[in-house]
Length: 254
Length: 220
Ligand SMILES: Nc1ncnc2c1ncn2[C@@H]1O[C@H](COP(=O)(O)OP(=O)(O)OP(=O)(O)O)[C@@H](O)[C@H]1O
Ligand SMILES: [Mg+2]
Image (tube, rainbow over all chains, first blue to last red; front, side, top):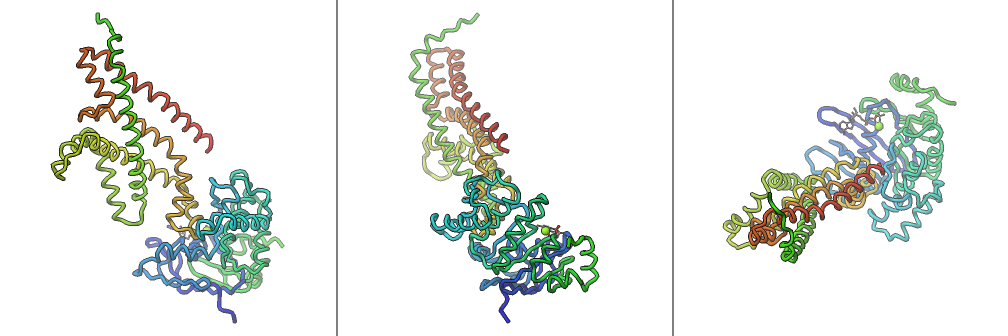
């Protein structure tokens, strides 16, 4: 068996008294695509944000590739430089895109390599142009983000994350802010990435997409993983009552 | 009825010009130094180190909550006793006005930075940039645009504040006006001219600020 690409052990997070992640254990194989589903407030975003340290866990351990961090309340946080290096290995795609409005599309995609890796502009530009072509936006390189549709913005955001050549991609409801007719262009980019063997964690309410693209589905509720297994099994025949009840809110579209 | 006599002021034209240039030079100096101090103190307010937050808070509140004239007199007359070195009037003036302006600039700069939505910082961090890089490359370039109108407003106030340095005999516009007024026994004419000069310099500047504010509103 492969060593997992991502390993999460006994992960805990609370905001004040409010415990949001109780005891999360998760192993994800290289190239696997995991869909993370669950009701609002169950801790999906928090888990994803812990994985790239945008939220600092209160306990547990996270390993991604060869970088690992142990967390316990007493120990000081890792230094900003070490955090930055850890994060550069995971690409994050946000619900609201968070493109840099003062930069062109090309500059947005070049920013990671140039600013975080100190790459030469020429080299970074070549990477950025290749990725923009890959997400179908080569012709928008010189546009500013406010000229783009939501779907185009999200595809730029994906290209921007990929420019760092991360080992893992994290998607937090990447299509939730999009008009329905723009969802498919973003999902299609994600589908291509999955097919290329990228290790991905996808927080999504697109159950049909999860069933089609994900290898595994993880269902969370109230800060714990309730059920986990092969995508089709979990979605078509959930074992837990909580999973069944959650999935019954979605009219599966196939 | 008082009869105005502006003719006798003509003989003092070089004095007024000189005073105006000193005032403008002083203003440029205290704006540059003040912005530097304000940037440091404003960012220190947002630092993750409590000591920096505390020190900058103390500095900002000290200079915002005491009268500028008191500060100026303190730096000119009291500080030399404390440190044992004589400070000339220009140095004391530049120091005081820069520190005073910096405390107001700091608040503008802090406010501009926190007005940028957290998602921008998160996106930068998520790429693997260090917090300092994120501030310089992502947050500040966007925040500066929003800061410009209030920073310009504060700088206009600073221009007028320079008139206080006349009390420690820095030869600025107001000081030269006082000289001319004593010489001529014509305070009405002299101080009217002095006020007019301040006014003529500042009116175009306030128009520029208004334009900047309008442009900012459009781009939102
Ligand atoms: N920075 C924070 N401070 C305090 N509470 C927070 C913070 N971030 C999240 N929470 C709380 O943690 C809980 C889990 O939030 P999280 O965003 O992880 O849920 P989610 O599963 O992503 O939900 P949704 O589907 O609505 O996005 C919520 O109750 C939320 O209010
Ligand atoms: Mg969420």
